[in-house]
Image (cartoon, rainbow over all chains, first blue to last red; front, side):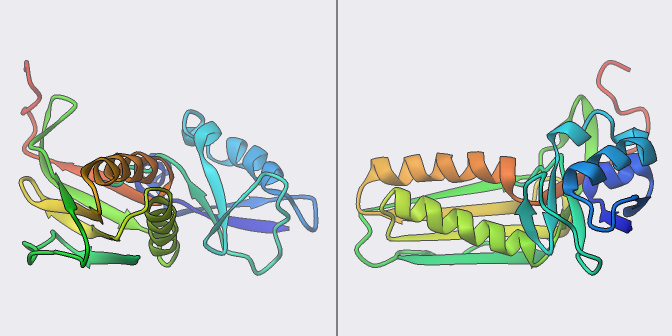
Length: 82
Length: 134
């Protein structure tokens, strides 16, 4: 399954684009599997990826969350509000 | 308990007086864009949000903090887009019966917001060669 992950702020700047698409062998991958795939697809995120969370359809999820084909997936890291 | 959350385009304008009913203490905090960041001269901060998640997370945090500290009211405002040096990008106001609850709630909210809420700032630097010490 192909998963597109939205990026924001400094992480989008590091990668040079607003989203990264990864191809996974599983038909219903977990966020943990997406995280592993991102390490290879976007090595620029190596430092910030471990401290980042996933949001699916605008809600934080844990690493075992299973992603469906029409889900919106975002990487939430390096937040700096206030 | 009244909770208000607003995302504004650009800097926050001056606010009108805010005096929720039955409050004995009202505390207000404003975050202002500083002129220097990491020894470099800033021109502007660009704030990104991820709606509706940003507003949802701000509201959920506001409700948790207001309940935990027994607040009368809480109002949080944050900028989206460009905010120049010297302008206000964030405002938090809390109202409680007594001072200690209001001050503790203010601190708790800001600590958690900075850690958990999907808001990002991206700097635009002033002219090249403005790093301190160069």
